[in-house]
View 1 (cartoon, helix red, strand yellow):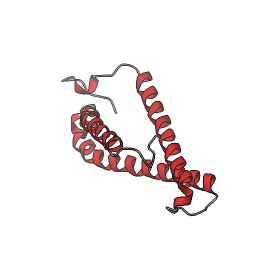
View 2: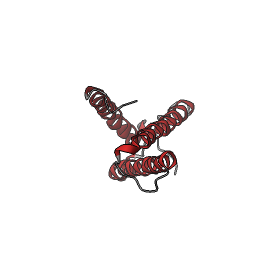
View 3: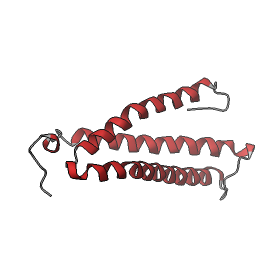
Length: 132
C-alpha cells in the first residue's frame, strides 16, 4: 500500500511491471483470439479487437471510480470528492478498496481461465471448419 511518504521508485516500479505484463499478454491474447476464428471472419475479429479493448478499459475505469466515490463518501461522509488535506484517510482508503476490488476481478479471471479446460484447435487445423 502506497503512503504519502513512499519513495517515488515504488509506484514507478508498479507502473513498469504493469506495462511489461500488458505488453506480453495483450498481443499474444489478441493473436490467439483472432486465430481461433474461421478464416473468413478473421478480418472482422481483428477490427473488433481494439474496440473490445477500449470497452474493457472504460468498464474498468467506471467500476474503479464507482468504488472510489463510494469508499470516499463512506469514510469521510462528504458527498463530493476533494483533495482536502484533512480528508486524506478517505482518499487513501478509497484507493485501497479500489485495488482490493481489482484483485477480486483478477482472481475470478484466473479461476475461470484455469477451469475452462483444454483448448480446441479445430479453427486452426487446415481442412476443418467450425460449424456456425
